Amino acid sequence: MPRAWEEEDILWDVDDCLNNTLLRIDDSGCVVVNLDHTIRLLIRESDCLVKMGVDLPIVCHSLYAKKNYFTLVNDSLQFLLEDYLRTVRRVKLEVRPLFLPQVVRLSSLLLPGLRFVGWTSDDWREFIDRANAAIKSFDVLVTRVHDIYTNRIIYMLSGMQEVTLITLPEETPWSVEEFIENVETGCRNACVELNRKSLMVEEAVEEVLDLVKKAAQQIKPTEINPDFEFLIAEGGL
Image (cartoon, rainbow, N blue to C red; front, side):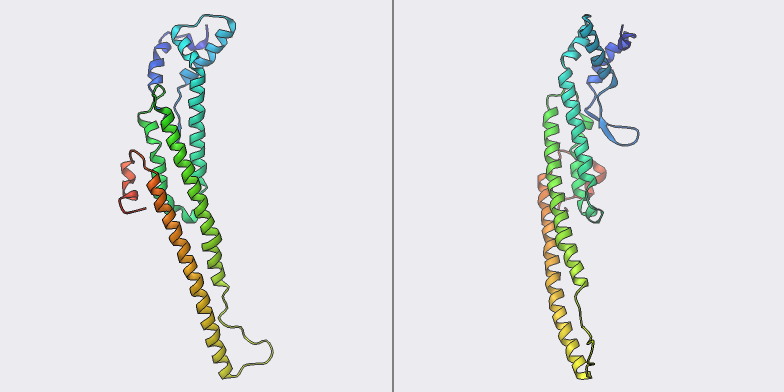
């Protein structure tokens, strides 16, 4: 007899295992898929018994018939968590404070899977689809913000550092009058250029803030961890 059925009581544990939520927080503080080892073991050993032509207990037969279902949900959850971590981790360090309210909203979309959506719930697909859609939207937002930050803000700030106030003569020295005139002209031109670049940086920053605010309206979790509610208070990002 397979190891999973050496103890008769383990069959009675199936109901408890199926009542588990889809996700849980492990000992290291990470969110993981909460498919109990008992379910995995019973399905695997049921598969072996079927191939041997051995009749299955009714509980195991029911689980085995749902093998594809458990595989689908388990894999969907694994992909969901991997995409979530990949997207959050790729946020540049320089703009992470700006994204903190967004990350709180995004992580809050996982709360249903941690609290009440279980392996027998009919709304598991809705939960996963909603979270996946939010992650994809967040990924697009991160890409756009990174593009603006790198190609417009940082690029312009680097250009501002290269603006020359005055270029000293290499051969014939200037008179005092020429020096004053050239300094005034150089500073005037530099001021115009710096002001132009500053306005472009300001425009880029405003565009980033506008993108983040609009994205906040799209990610609306049903509940928020109360420890982080202050980060997304009304009127904030």
